[in-house]
Image: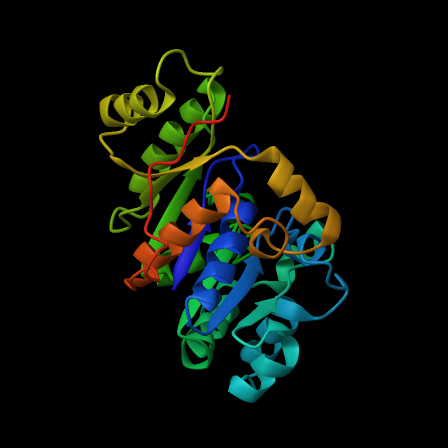
Length: 276
C-alpha cells in the first residue's frame, strides 16, 4: 500500500501517483490506483475516464453496508490495461462526506486482496478541526487522508522544487510528524530544474531538507513539461506517449524501489539531467 501525499499547491502528487502505478503494472505487478483526494481528485480526467463513475465513493458505500468484496471492487474499478485498475475519485469536492474514514479503511483492506500493490493519491490537509465545530460526532473531511496514511506501508511525500514549495513541504512534514508520529515518509522532490533554486538544485534542495526537516531526499524527479502536457492532452500515461522521457525513467526507478523489484536489464537508473 503506497500513499502519495504532499503539501498544498501543485507539487505533482497525481502525476507521481499515476506514473508509479502505471510503471508498477509494467514491471509485472498487478496494481490498483485509487483517487482519495477529497479536495479535487483528477485521476479520471488525467486518464480520460468518465468522472461520474461510482469509483471510490461506490466502494465506500458498499464497505459501510458490509457488502464489499473483491468482485464488487473489480466491478467498480476501471481496467486501464490488464495489470492496472483505477478506482476513480469524487466527481465533485462537495461530496466528501461520502468518504468516511472507516469505510475508506475497509476499501483499502479489500484492495490488498485484489492487487499486489495499491497506490493511493490523497489530499494534502491533515487538519482535524471539523470535530471542534460540533458537540457531537461529525463528518471529518480530512479523515479519509488520515486513514490512507495510517494504512499505507509506504508514504511518498511529494514536494515541488521551488522555494515556496520547499517551505510548504518542510512545514507539512512537521505537521505529519505531530499528527502521525509513526509514519516515516519517503521524500520525493518533483519538477526539479535549474532556475528557481540557485546553484546545483539537487544539492541545495537536499541540504534544505536535511537542515530544516532532518530528512533525506530519496528521489529527484526532473521537470519534463512537454511529456506531461502530451500525456494530459491525450488522457494517457507517460509510458504511452513519451516512453523515452527522462521523467518516465525516474518514475520507473521510483516504482521499482517502492515495490522492491529490480529494473529490467538494460534499464538501470541513471543520473537524470536537470531541466534548464
